[in-house]
Image (cartoon, rainbow, N blue to C red; front, top):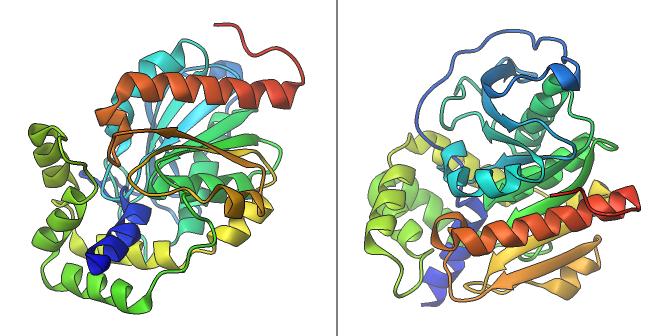
Length: 308
Protein backbone atom coordinates (compact mmCIF):
# COMPACT_ATOMS: atom_id res chain seq x y z
CA UNK A 1 0.00 0.00 0.00
CA UNK A 2 2.82 2.43 0.79
CA UNK A 3 4.42 1.87 -2.61
CA UNK A 4 1.12 2.37 -4.38
CA UNK A 5 0.38 5.55 -2.42
CA UNK A 6 3.79 7.04 -3.13
CA UNK A 7 3.57 6.18 -6.80
CA UNK A 8 0.08 7.60 -7.00
CA UNK A 9 1.42 10.87 -5.54
CA UNK A 10 3.96 10.95 -8.37
CA UNK A 11 1.29 10.51 -11.02
CA UNK A 12 -1.07 12.98 -9.34
CA UNK A 13 1.52 15.55 -10.13
CA UNK A 14 1.20 14.35 -13.67
CA UNK A 15 -2.47 13.57 -13.98
CA UNK A 16 -2.72 15.75 -17.05
CA UNK A 17 0.14 15.84 -19.50
CA UNK A 18 -0.68 14.42 -22.91
CA UNK A 19 -3.74 13.98 -25.06
CA UNK A 20 -4.56 12.96 -28.62
CA UNK A 21 -4.03 14.63 -31.96
CA UNK A 22 -1.00 16.28 -33.48
CA UNK A 23 -0.33 19.80 -34.70
CA UNK A 24 2.12 21.26 -37.18
CA UNK A 25 4.75 23.90 -36.43
CA UNK A 26 4.12 27.32 -37.92
CA UNK A 27 7.39 29.16 -37.41
CA UNK A 28 7.49 32.57 -35.76
CA UNK A 29 4.57 33.67 -33.62
CA UNK A 30 2.42 36.46 -35.09
CA UNK A 31 2.14 39.81 -33.35
CA UNK A 32 -0.51 40.02 -30.65
CA UNK A 33 -3.81 41.52 -31.79
CA UNK A 34 -5.62 44.18 -29.79
CA UNK A 35 -7.82 42.63 -27.08
CA UNK A 36 -10.99 43.96 -28.73
CA UNK A 37 -10.06 42.21 -31.98
CA UNK A 38 -9.74 38.74 -30.47
CA UNK A 39 -12.13 36.40 -32.31
CA UNK A 40 -13.91 33.60 -30.51
CA UNK A 41 -13.33 30.05 -31.65
CA UNK A 42 -10.24 27.89 -32.21
CA UNK A 43 -6.86 29.29 -33.16
CA UNK A 44 -3.15 28.58 -33.06
CA UNK A 45 0.09 30.33 -32.25
CA UNK A 46 3.70 29.20 -31.96
CA UNK A 47 5.94 28.53 -29.00
CA UNK A 48 9.43 29.97 -28.73
CA UNK A 49 10.84 26.72 -30.15
CA UNK A 50 8.40 26.58 -33.07
CA UNK A 51 5.79 24.15 -31.75
CA UNK A 52 2.23 24.94 -32.76
CA UNK A 53 -0.07 25.59 -29.79
CA UNK A 54 -3.80 25.09 -30.24
CA UNK A 55 -6.25 27.11 -28.16
CA UNK A 56 -9.94 28.05 -28.14
CA UNK A 57 -11.37 31.45 -27.19
CA UNK A 58 -14.79 30.74 -25.68
CA UNK A 59 -15.56 34.28 -24.52
CA UNK A 60 -13.68 37.58 -24.60
CA UNK A 61 -13.61 39.41 -21.29
CA UNK A 62 -11.48 40.87 -18.51
CA UNK A 63 -10.19 39.18 -16.52
CA UNK A 64 -9.77 36.07 -18.66
CA UNK A 65 -9.46 32.58 -17.24
CA UNK A 66 -6.93 30.52 -19.20
CA UNK A 67 -7.60 26.84 -18.49
CA UNK A 68 -4.71 24.36 -18.64
CA UNK A 69 -5.24 20.59 -18.63
CA UNK A 70 -2.99 17.97 -17.02
CA UNK A 71 -0.91 14.96 -18.00
CA UNK A 72 -2.22 12.88 -20.90
CA UNK A 73 -5.31 15.09 -21.24
CA UNK A 74 -6.42 17.97 -23.49
CA UNK A 75 -8.50 21.15 -23.42
CA UNK A 76 -11.72 19.13 -23.77
CA UNK A 77 -11.39 18.05 -20.14
CA UNK A 78 -12.66 21.55 -19.18
CA UNK A 79 -15.90 21.19 -21.16
CA UNK A 80 -18.24 21.26 -18.16
CA UNK A 81 -16.61 24.38 -16.66
CA UNK A 82 -16.64 26.62 -19.71
CA UNK A 83 -20.30 27.66 -19.62
CA UNK A 84 -20.48 28.69 -15.96
CA UNK A 85 -17.14 30.52 -16.12
CA UNK A 86 -18.02 32.30 -19.38
CA UNK A 87 -21.10 33.85 -17.74
CA UNK A 88 -18.73 36.03 -15.73
CA UNK A 89 -15.24 35.99 -17.24
CA UNK A 90 -13.39 35.65 -20.49
CA UNK A 91 -12.44 32.01 -21.04
CA UNK A 92 -9.63 30.45 -23.10
CA UNK A 93 -8.64 26.77 -23.16
CA UNK A 94 -5.26 25.50 -24.32
CA UNK A 95 -3.77 22.26 -25.62
CA UNK A 96 -0.23 22.05 -24.30
CA UNK A 97 2.39 20.80 -26.78
CA UNK A 98 2.32 17.01 -26.96
CA UNK A 99 -1.42 17.08 -26.18
CA UNK A 100 -4.64 17.38 -28.13
CA UNK A 101 -4.25 19.30 -31.38
CA UNK A 102 -0.93 20.94 -30.51
CA UNK A 103 2.40 19.92 -32.01
CA UNK A 104 4.81 17.32 -30.64
CA UNK A 105 8.04 18.45 -32.30
CA UNK A 106 9.86 19.42 -29.11
CA UNK A 107 13.24 18.06 -28.06
CA UNK A 108 13.30 19.13 -24.42
CA UNK A 109 10.15 18.86 -22.31
CA UNK A 110 9.88 20.94 -19.14
CA UNK A 111 7.29 22.63 -16.95
CA UNK A 112 8.91 26.01 -17.59
CA UNK A 113 8.57 25.43 -21.35
CA UNK A 114 4.87 24.73 -20.83
CA UNK A 115 4.58 27.90 -18.74
CA UNK A 116 6.14 29.82 -21.62
CA UNK A 117 3.70 28.15 -24.03
CA UNK A 118 0.74 29.42 -22.00
CA UNK A 119 2.41 32.84 -21.84
CA UNK A 120 2.75 32.76 -25.65
CA UNK A 121 -1.01 32.24 -26.03
CA UNK A 122 -1.77 35.06 -23.57
CA UNK A 123 0.62 37.41 -25.39
CA UNK A 124 -0.65 36.39 -28.82
CA UNK A 125 -4.24 37.18 -27.80
CA UNK A 126 -3.27 40.44 -26.10
CA UNK A 127 -5.03 39.52 -22.85
CA UNK A 128 -4.39 42.28 -20.28
CA UNK A 129 -5.45 40.50 -17.07
CA UNK A 130 -5.40 36.74 -16.74
CA UNK A 131 -6.07 34.13 -14.09
CA UNK A 132 -4.43 30.85 -15.09
CA UNK A 133 -6.21 27.73 -13.84
CA UNK A 134 -4.59 24.32 -14.12
CA UNK A 135 -5.66 20.78 -13.34
CA UNK A 136 -3.06 18.36 -11.95
CA UNK A 137 0.21 18.98 -13.81
CA UNK A 138 -1.50 22.02 -15.28
CA UNK A 139 -1.33 23.59 -11.83
CA UNK A 140 2.47 23.61 -12.00
CA UNK A 141 2.24 25.03 -15.51
CA UNK A 142 -0.06 27.79 -14.23
CA UNK A 143 2.46 28.79 -11.57
CA UNK A 144 5.24 28.78 -14.17
CA UNK A 145 3.11 30.98 -16.46
CA UNK A 146 2.54 33.46 -13.64
CA UNK A 147 6.27 33.68 -13.09
CA UNK A 148 6.81 34.19 -16.83
CA UNK A 149 4.24 37.00 -17.18
CA UNK A 150 4.43 39.31 -14.16
CA UNK A 151 1.81 42.02 -14.32
CA UNK A 152 -0.50 40.17 -16.72
CA UNK A 153 -1.23 37.07 -14.66
CA UNK A 154 -3.09 38.26 -11.55
CA UNK A 155 -3.71 34.87 -9.94
CA UNK A 156 -3.46 31.09 -10.17
CA UNK A 157 -6.15 28.50 -9.48
CA UNK A 158 -5.12 24.87 -9.13
CA UNK A 159 -7.68 22.07 -9.48
CA UNK A 160 -6.65 19.01 -7.46
CA UNK A 161 -3.01 20.01 -7.59
CA UNK A 162 -0.42 22.09 -5.71
CA UNK A 163 -1.02 19.92 -2.64
CA UNK A 164 2.45 20.43 -1.21
CA UNK A 165 4.90 22.74 -2.99
CA UNK A 166 7.80 21.51 -0.87
CA UNK A 167 7.19 17.79 -1.38
CA UNK A 168 10.16 15.66 -2.40
CA UNK A 169 9.55 12.36 -4.17
CA UNK A 170 11.29 9.11 -3.31
CA UNK A 171 13.79 8.51 -6.15
CA UNK A 172 13.27 4.75 -6.00
CA UNK A 173 9.51 5.12 -6.36
CA UNK A 174 9.97 7.52 -9.25
CA UNK A 175 12.35 5.21 -11.08
CA UNK A 176 10.05 2.25 -10.50
CA UNK A 177 7.16 4.16 -12.07
CA UNK A 178 9.29 5.36 -14.99
CA UNK A 179 10.58 1.85 -15.64
CA UNK A 180 7.04 0.49 -15.67
CA UNK A 181 5.90 3.18 -18.10
CA UNK A 182 8.89 2.62 -20.37
CA UNK A 183 8.47 -1.15 -20.45
CA UNK A 184 4.67 -1.38 -20.59
CA UNK A 185 3.12 2.03 -20.88
CA UNK A 186 -0.56 1.15 -21.29
CA UNK A 187 -0.98 -1.29 -18.37
CA UNK A 188 1.21 0.80 -16.04
CA UNK A 189 -0.60 4.01 -16.94
CA UNK A 190 -3.96 2.26 -16.58
CA UNK A 191 -3.20 1.11 -13.05
CA UNK A 192 -2.09 4.54 -11.90
CA UNK A 193 -4.93 6.47 -13.48
CA UNK A 194 -7.49 4.13 -11.93
CA UNK A 195 -5.82 4.82 -8.58
CA UNK A 196 -6.88 8.46 -8.91
CA UNK A 197 -10.54 7.62 -8.47
CA UNK A 198 -12.39 6.79 -5.26
CA UNK A 199 -14.64 3.85 -4.35
CA UNK A 200 -17.99 4.49 -5.94
CA UNK A 201 -16.61 6.48 -8.90
CA UNK A 202 -18.60 5.98 -12.08
CA UNK A 203 -17.21 2.92 -13.89
CA UNK A 204 -17.91 4.28 -17.37
CA UNK A 205 -16.14 7.54 -16.53
CA UNK A 206 -13.14 5.62 -15.19
CA UNK A 207 -12.95 3.57 -18.37
CA UNK A 208 -13.25 6.62 -20.62
CA UNK A 209 -10.63 8.72 -18.87
CA UNK A 210 -8.22 5.81 -18.43
CA UNK A 211 -8.53 4.80 -22.07
CA UNK A 212 -8.03 8.37 -23.24
CA UNK A 213 -5.04 9.21 -21.06
CA UNK A 214 -3.23 5.92 -21.64
CA UNK A 215 -3.61 5.90 -25.42
CA UNK A 216 -0.85 8.43 -26.12
CA UNK A 217 2.83 8.00 -26.97
CA UNK A 218 4.62 6.61 -23.95
CA UNK A 219 7.88 8.40 -24.71
CA UNK A 220 6.21 11.79 -24.27
CA UNK A 221 4.45 10.66 -21.12
CA UNK A 222 7.72 9.48 -19.57
CA UNK A 223 9.56 12.68 -20.56
CA UNK A 224 6.83 14.77 -18.99
CA UNK A 225 6.88 12.73 -15.81
CA UNK A 226 10.60 13.38 -15.49
CA UNK A 227 9.94 17.09 -16.07
CA UNK A 228 7.25 17.14 -13.40
CA UNK A 229 9.46 15.55 -10.75
CA UNK A 230 12.39 17.84 -11.64
CA UNK A 231 10.38 21.07 -11.39
CA UNK A 232 11.18 23.34 -8.44
CA UNK A 233 7.61 24.08 -7.39
CA UNK A 234 8.65 25.68 -4.11
CA UNK A 235 10.86 28.15 -5.97
CA UNK A 236 8.12 28.85 -8.50
CA UNK A 237 5.61 29.46 -5.68
CA UNK A 238 7.92 31.99 -4.07
CA UNK A 239 8.60 33.75 -7.39
CA UNK A 240 5.04 33.83 -8.78
CA UNK A 241 4.10 37.00 -6.92
CA UNK A 242 0.33 36.44 -7.20
CA UNK A 243 -2.37 34.76 -5.10
CA UNK A 244 -2.30 30.99 -5.55
CA UNK A 245 -5.50 29.13 -4.75
CA UNK A 246 -6.31 25.43 -4.92
CA UNK A 247 -9.63 23.63 -5.21
CA UNK A 248 -8.74 20.09 -4.23
CA UNK A 249 -10.42 16.79 -3.56
CA UNK A 250 -9.75 15.15 -0.19
CA UNK A 251 -8.14 12.09 -1.78
CA UNK A 252 -4.70 13.49 -0.92
CA UNK A 253 -3.88 15.99 1.86
CA UNK A 254 -3.13 19.65 1.13
CA UNK A 255 -0.26 21.19 3.12
CA UNK A 256 -1.75 24.59 3.92
CA UNK A 257 0.95 25.71 6.35
CA UNK A 258 3.84 24.64 4.13
CA UNK A 259 2.39 26.31 1.05
CA UNK A 260 1.51 29.49 2.95
CA UNK A 261 5.12 29.78 4.05
CA UNK A 262 6.07 30.15 0.38
CA UNK A 263 3.26 32.24 -1.15
CA UNK A 264 -0.16 33.83 -0.72
CA UNK A 265 -1.93 30.46 -0.71
CA UNK A 266 -5.30 29.10 0.29
CA UNK A 267 -7.32 26.02 -0.58
CA UNK A 268 -10.91 24.85 -0.77
CA UNK A 269 -11.50 21.11 -0.26
CA UNK A 270 -14.31 19.27 -2.07
CA UNK A 271 -14.95 16.09 -0.11
CA UNK A 272 -15.74 12.64 -1.43
CA UNK A 273 -14.35 12.97 -4.96
CA UNK A 274 -11.38 11.67 -6.88
CA UNK A 275 -8.79 13.49 -8.93
CA UNK A 276 -10.94 14.47 -11.92
CA UNK A 277 -13.15 17.09 -10.32
CA UNK A 278 -14.23 18.56 -13.67
CA UNK A 279 -16.00 15.29 -14.52
CA UNK A 280 -16.84 14.00 -11.04
CA UNK A 281 -18.15 17.22 -9.46
CA UNK A 282 -18.81 19.60 -12.38
CA UNK A 283 -21.37 21.88 -10.73
CA UNK A 284 -19.62 22.07 -7.37
CA UNK A 285 -16.28 22.76 -9.03
CA UNK A 286 -17.79 25.42 -11.31
CA UNK A 287 -19.23 27.29 -8.32
CA UNK A 288 -15.91 27.06 -6.50
CA UNK A 289 -13.96 28.31 -9.52
CA UNK A 290 -16.31 31.27 -10.08
CA UNK A 291 -16.09 32.20 -6.40
CA UNK A 292 -12.31 31.87 -6.33
CA UNK A 293 -11.74 33.79 -9.57
CA UNK A 294 -14.09 36.58 -8.47
CA UNK A 295 -12.21 36.92 -5.18
CA UNK A 296 -8.87 37.14 -7.01
CA UNK A 297 -10.27 39.77 -9.39
CA UNK A 298 -11.72 41.78 -6.51
CA UNK A 299 -8.45 41.74 -4.58
CA UNK A 300 -6.51 42.80 -7.67
CA UNK A 301 -8.90 45.64 -8.56
CA UNK A 302 -9.41 46.80 -4.99
CA UNK A 303 -13.13 47.06 -5.69
CA UNK A 304 -16.27 44.99 -6.29
CA UNK A 305 -16.14 41.70 -8.15
CA UNK A 306 -16.97 41.76 -11.88
CA UNK A 307 -20.75 41.80 -12.49
CA UNK A 308 -22.44 38.51 -13.29
